Length: 126
Image (cartoon, rainbow, N blue to C red):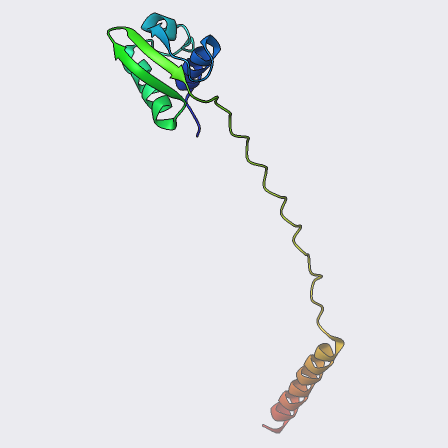
């Protein structure tokens, strides 16, 4: 599962504070400290991050009330490795240009010469 920046930061904060499976009470302000600098620090973003972590099985939320959350990390996040690059495409085979056989040229010239002779005879007779 790929996690967004806020979820990853919150999970790192929770995992750094306690061992797997142990519940710790956090205030919203403590969890907001983990947010990236450019992220909005509002309750809806925090709840969304915790909901995503809970759905993925990374944390368990025992209770949440007011600005306090009782959370236990269940497993560590391991980033998925980047997929390997696709293999290079094989070089297209280049075929040499087709040459017209010598027999074609002999037949072409013979046909043209025969037509010329017939045309001259027809022109002289008529």
